[in-house]
Length: 438
Image 1 (cartoon, helix red, strand yellow):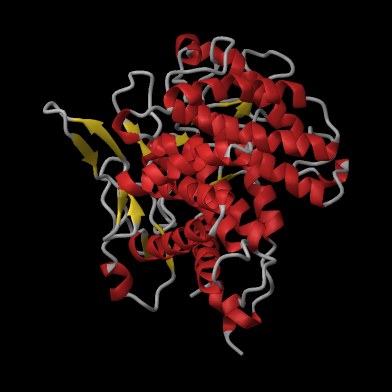
Image 2 (cartoon, one colour; image 1 turned 120 degrees about the horizontal axis):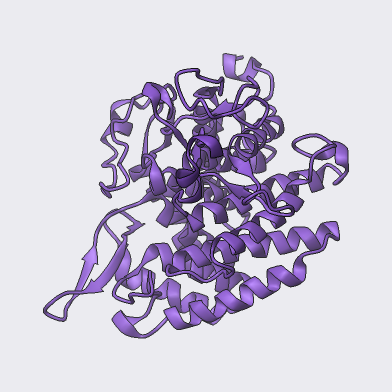
């Protein structure tokens, strides 16, 4: 019997609860003190009103970070539902709002903070929120909670935006922004997934076909970033490779289904394993930054076959979300019985390994007297040692996002939470413990 076999089973459910408690405590707050609202602060610690009113009011607005925050809360809500949806099952204790209720308040906060509308200038942002509210709607239906009418209105409004973004320019696909000069995977893939989940299979398939024809790199087996018209009128392909682009493509392929799509999905899982993984504990080597956009060659993997392989991460800022998004959709692949067992096992292993690395790199979010004196004890500032900070890079667990006096970004913490929720969703699947950790 190996040490791994002898180890007690991991309580992924409690790990996911710990991540949920940490993110909501450190970053969650009302919008301008308004009851019935919730929003995620961009940084932790945040300036207090007395020490930076202007900075408090003019914090950057990252719409799509909030959309993924909704998705994470829905994950927690589904686990609460699985445990009976009773107050005792709530991730943060019976005296606190359920995860689903908090997610609904967050959707309200997004609308108010976004100037009383869910529409913005980026189609990918809107697609992520549409997907999150679709899942929230399903959770509300199962728990018989209010809010479904509002969620449906959100999707109706955003669906009109997606229809306008999907044109025949460049042969198909969805525009990325309302400048309408660039079509890319980050917008096209989640829009395709939204169409697929709302019964518009033909539209979803057309977008998937455009992605495969225009942005699929057959040599690597993964999807490139985007396409635009060059000065000479020819199509120019942006060849950057990002982890999160592969996720919604995978999700859409699975959702639409069919032999060809499922074969592409299985191949994509294996390509991710070959090109977008690095050895755990190997620092940042092989980890692309958010701007590098290059896929790993697999040399790190070949050089250290005995090490646990994890998904590469893409740094901070927007890149701090990328790997968590990929984990979400790899978990769907791991649970899909239509895929070959090898592809399912690969997807499960990548998620489990990456989530374990994030968990191993956690540290208490203890207050630091040398930073942000405006943060008050007892208000989600991390004085409670139960609150955790997760690393930016799964491959380098000691890489704390707040080392050296820096702040912690919401994106990086949502990423770890997403990965842990994904691991939780597949932990009970029929895979050997040793197979998942190799």
